[in-house]
Length: 96
Image (cartoon, rainbow, N blue to C red; front, side):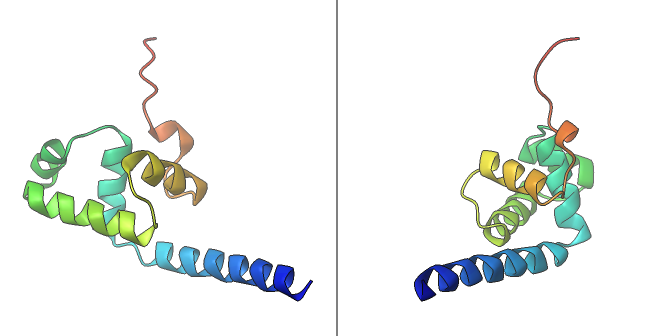
């Protein structure tokens, strides 16, 4: 029983820790996240924000590390879960 409580408490602590990290996202990271969610490439994001592609890559890497994900699909899913981006921010690819 104590082990279950311990695991449950760890989960709560991780959740709190993760949400605390989310609050520390910079305005630039939030902007990059929004553009990634819209399907823009690193080059397009760099051109739009007047920063280098390498700087965009560093921001994306830091976002992924902070949200503890390994790829863009996980990044977007986690961002939606944490309500960093609205669910309708991601294009579905469906023609209207």
